[in-house]
Amino acid sequence: MPAWAAAVTGIVAGAVALGAAQIVAGLIDPGAAPVVAVGGVVVDATPGGVKEWAIGTFGSADKPVLLGGIVVVLALVAAGLGLLARRRAAHGTLGLALFGLVGAAAALSRPDAGVAHVLPSLVGAAGGAWTLSRLARRAMSTGEEDYVAASRAAGRESVSARAAGLPETAAPAAPAGDSGHGSAPGDDHPEPGPAMPTAMPAVMRAGAEPVSPPYAFDRRRLLTGATAGVVVAGVAGLGGWLLSGSKDAELARRNVARMLPRAARPAAPIPAGADLRIPGLAPFVTPNAEFYRVDTALVVPSVDPARWTLKIHGLVDRPIELTFADLLKRPLIEADVTLTCVSNEVGGPYAGNARWLGARLADVLREAGIRREADMLLSVSQDGWTSGTPIDVVMDGRDALLAVAMNGEVLPEAHGFPVRQVVPGLYGYVSATKWITEIKVTRFDQDEGYWTPLGWAPRGPIKTQSRIDVPRDGGEVAAGRATVAGVAWAQHRGIDAVEVRVDRGMWRLARLADVPGPDTWRQWSIDLDLAPGTHTISVRATDATGYTQTEEEAPPAPDGATGYHTIAVTAR
Ligand SMILES: Nc1nc2c(c(=O)[nH]1)N[C@H]1C(S)=C(S)[C@@H](COP(=O)(O)O)O[C@H]1N2
Ligand SMILES: [Mo]
Image 1: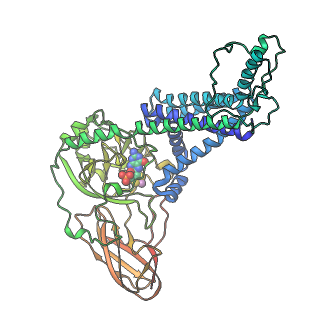
Image 2: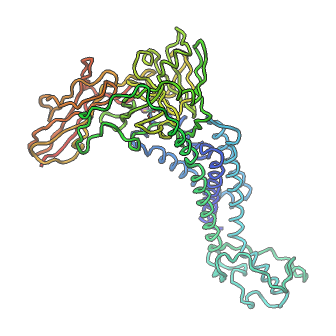
């Protein structure tokens, strides 16, 4: 078999392996799929800086990019296995078995794994090994089968295979790869005629010298087999994807939608003047579908609210375990809170504002009785991710919530269904645990949240920031009057002023939109006269403590970016 053909058998076997694994994972848990499990291990093992670089470079496409990268690497390895198997079939099987074990080990190592999580990888490896040997045999068996047929024909009719009009590939000397095979594709099992012997080739029974079967490579048979393999892999992969789709979770979300009580303390209506409705400016309320998403979960953890519990333990007088029904029985409050990610660059998109409905975290903690020495809540998500939140912040009266709804809808799966934390004023990595299942009351000198050992600050208060949304950086405007607008935030302190300057000139005060309280971002706008030419426009905000943003530029790590958002526009 030529090398390229061996590589093709390897790649197709790899595809079948992944497809088979996917469909088994679809039945068990999408997180048990080997690519996802290995991806998860890679994410957790990747240094923080690289992760942040990935989030910064690929944005919300970071997960598809990683999964795509893993698939490319796997394809190369699979091609290599095909080449190995060309030398010795056992090597291919061994290689696939090894990969099955790696996938199984990765799946088992995930924090939410059960023993069944090894199955997708093992079934996949078995399917891959079978495909590899099958394909290799198929690509090389033409000669054998035709030889058999020819021998039978010879035995019966005493004529040579050639004279009987059999394909040229029957001849041992047929040029590899270019055998004008005459049969139709898929005609791999010629029906024996009624008179044909069904056991040994006639030539052998006739006592002719045993000739080793004339193996020959048949490109067409390889390609039809490979196509079939790719189709099987595709169908299996798609089936697995559909199976693992969020059908259960969607159903659960609909059930929860019926259970959701009204807020015991509804939020005041959002002031009409909160949204300046300027095209291109982020709307005051971010629609759920447009809300930024940042997390380490390659597949969204699916949590059954009927089985969900929240354990609160550690430095408490009375450990408690709440069910979802328990949570909904509590008085729920509504709060408008803007979430922000610490990895947001100045001017970046990782901020969003929503109306959350949830139980007060402080009340729940008071029932558990927090010990004096405790200063941190280590909240744990279903998928093992953790976040360390300062207790004093949660207990100071702000609307720190165990949230169950977002903008009047049950929490979307990607945003933490069924329950997540929301704490105004803290970056998401130290507060906004999605798919939360556990809170360990502990101390900063004893425990660390997920990102802290990766170089991020243990505590993450949100820094005062402002952003220009309109006009777009690098865009063009008509010379003369131009509206410049954006958002500014300093959660739980509130924004008191926003200033804008053009070409490093004088700072001018922008007009501020209304806000329902200090926990959301605040829109602003200003009309400027822009002479023809290219200009830079900068913005800075002052919060209600009187602090004005620093011009000093700092990267997101370790505790949030600083500096003025500055854009360039050309007026024509
Ligand atoms: N379980 C879990 N919760 C998580 C994270 C995560 O990786 N896993 N990321 C946090 C970070 S860094 C941020 S900024 C917010 C983002 O919330 P969103 O995706 O709903 O916008 O979720 C937080 N909650
Ligand atoms: Mo974040």
